[in-house]
Image (tube, rainbow, N blue to C red):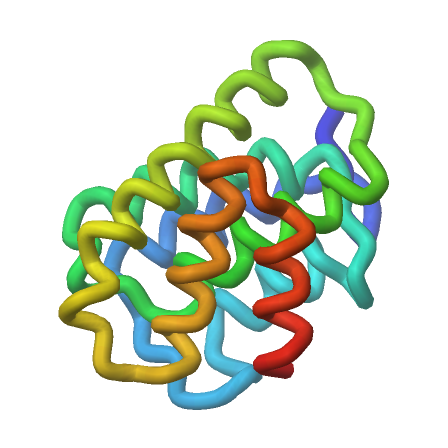
Length: 147
């Protein structure tokens, strides 16, 4: 069973389904991102559901990467940096899908960076590209400098 900050992660699939419509992120409390951040990256802590969610986030983003809002880049990248520092114990298949998704989000980020005009999204996309290259520390420093 996958878990998140509040226990069993049985509510995460419905939240992930909502991101397929590319909901606006007008502030830090915008749903469904607020609930996803709260459950999957709670005060810097990550969980088995955190790693399992990343492939779904990246898959949704892959449909139309030009519509990606901040959290499409930032949440997977933040989870990756946290997992690099303190790896979460997950089944091999989840770990493999997670790693493949980090490569994919980095590839998408590199392709989209020239057209991203929002500074925060650009920073998150650059960090995603760094993570996809294995530069976790640089990605973390970039995100920390922008915080």
